[in-house]
Image 1 (cartoon, rainbow over the protein chains, first blue to last red):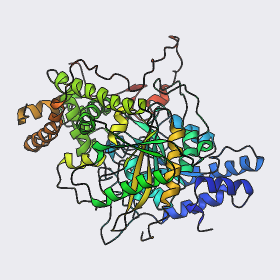
Image 2 (image 1 turned 135 degrees about the horizontal axis):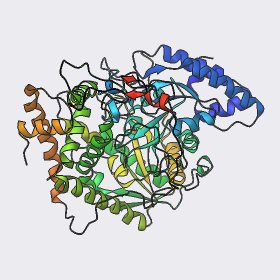
Image 3 (image 1 turned 135 degrees about the vertical axis):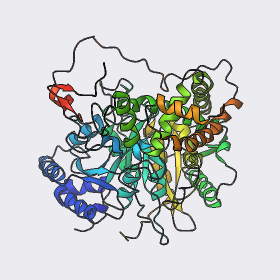
Image 4 (image 1 turned 180 degrees about the vertical axis):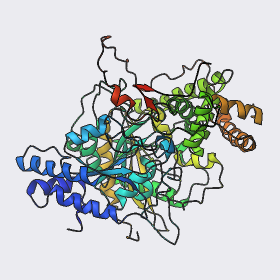
Length: 493
Length: 95
């Protein structure tokens, strides 16, 4: 029974329906894997009682024969999702001890579909980071290891990435504001999908940058991403930006047939000094799509270069506004006050103690770019550039491009601590290939496509038309089949 | 538009984050680095470009102006660091 945590969602679904094993058995196997995974630091709040109760209920539903696809599937939940009665901290000291009185819409939909919660997953604090080194719970380690160094699983959904790659759970939820699902998925060799902005409800997901945030699945296969997205997606009256469009049967779209499809290759994604391994992987990906019968088209997305600087205006601006709610009054941490301290000191000390350095930095940048005199120079200019970035994509889609193929990350995983002395901008460059997608509100997926010459996983990204996740997933399915990525990290933890 | 320690202190104040005097030079340096990165945006011609307000062309929905939720005092106060007699408690605000 020791192998059940290695199952994909679709294998688990089919096996449970056939009676080959039960949800309780899979759940117990995952719980024991989690128990022994302390060195990864991926799970930070375990919920075995909830998991077993949900698994028992799922087994009854499955036996009754009316269970949805996610029924009985044990998941890890990123700490950004509010889970009723269970610690929800966004990996920040400022939300220490916070136990929401409500459940996020996405997790509620997953539980309604019969999924099982194993616990909460580590992440970068408030989803701000690309290496999972800004968490109040400490760094997350990747299950991949090539020497004595501990490697980053990427970020901000690093706990989700590490847990799925290490087979602690069958899949996990992630969120993606500038690449936080796709970058970690690529660095650990799993699949990560950021849906179109508005496909999934943001209600009950701790807000970072509301116009960019979108949750999505992190899974062991493209098929699993399709199955899980369907359970997560849909209109929610509590999020007025969530779309009323019908949620299609994403799994049914997976034919693997992409003959005649037009795949765009953007010239601007060919960066100076890009590692040869990334270049090679991209070329191989292009060949694979060609072999699958797709037509390769050179395209231009001329404002790509300005995506990162625009993002680092827009995202901190929104964050400074969203994070104003952490004031030590309604929830979370409040600093101990000295004699004579008033409410301003309470705010200032609480936020200085509760927010980590990267969060403080971004809140202050956001405050600055929104302040009187700089609003037009920075914030409004960035919003105009964002309009241009979106138009770049609209133009190529109008030319008949079906999907765009790019590398997912500019390099493979680096060692934890190795970027400690780099300036913040160096770290931001991790998101160079992913951030455009958030600015344009598009769906994007990272698919594991190969190993670099050190033996570390690398991913390719496919970007789709808005609301056409079904078509995007089918392209990803074709890429997954052609790449045939099967490598797994060797257990050391 | 370079940030000196005085501006850094003002930004910290606006953000309501206590930053010790000794930390201000480091903070000013970091903010300058990030702002220099943003300066690239000045190369873009944004004449007659509308600033983005919504990434998906959808109209925000309206609903009836009626009460849909409420009467949950206990749940609202459950996570407060200091709640007394049905209220959030804070240091004295009015002299």
